[in-house]
Image (cartoon, rainbow, N blue to C red; front, top):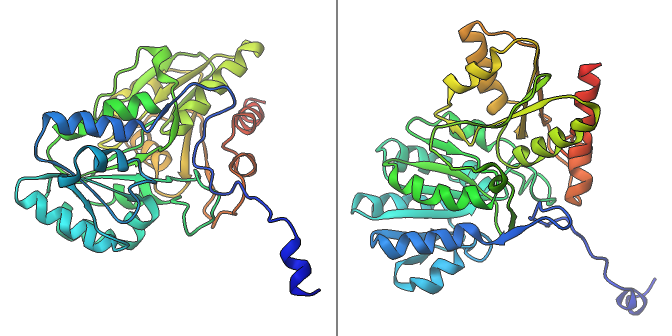
Length: 334
């Protein structure tokens, strides 16, 4: 086949890099992190925005437009980004640092550990494409970021559910003195927690709905899925409770134990993260340490390098779509 023939063929399109996890017809808000940070910076002159060539893709471009003199674009150098953030924090600034979760947790881990966390500096690291929210494959899928960041001393770790929680999270982590790692949903982000009169509190889990047969302990986008699962089970008269745990570290052990102690319920931890080292193992450890032993299962990503492809296909393949979760839990209930 000659080059002329090849050049006339239409280029195939791919949906692999779709970062939005909004369902069809779902209410969304555009760039909730970027807008919330701009509002925060209007009131706090020490807030600065920093990124490693990903301002547009972490919604930090809104901050750059509003406060160009407080915006630092460090280029594709994540280690330098973290080191510079540490230096600015030493001088009294409060840096909000953005990049992709894989680049922060895998490429710049030692710089966060030694330059930021060891000195307990007031740096907020907010990272896009958490877990399986991109189809670009293992190079961009941060399936193990929570495990890595949970292991870092002094680091607070947050996995927000939706646009509302991201908006509420920004001022809350600004009020917290010390380093924070937060997952970020960017672009057009679903709004789901407004139906539950929700208010984010750092370090607190919230029971969004109750149920007698199943308790789903979830975080991040899996709380959206858990709420959809609970509604699906209503047709079968099966009560599914949803306990949302946005703060992975420090873990709200008291609330988790209180809900898990209630007899007769299957406890399922749902997370957009590998089964290794994330919320599931944190909850399991808390339950076992306290001598609380309900029937326990996990819905999570496998301990494997994940495929590339379109997100709906991948979510079905790896069991974190609503339909896949319903089928899995029905199987456990028998």
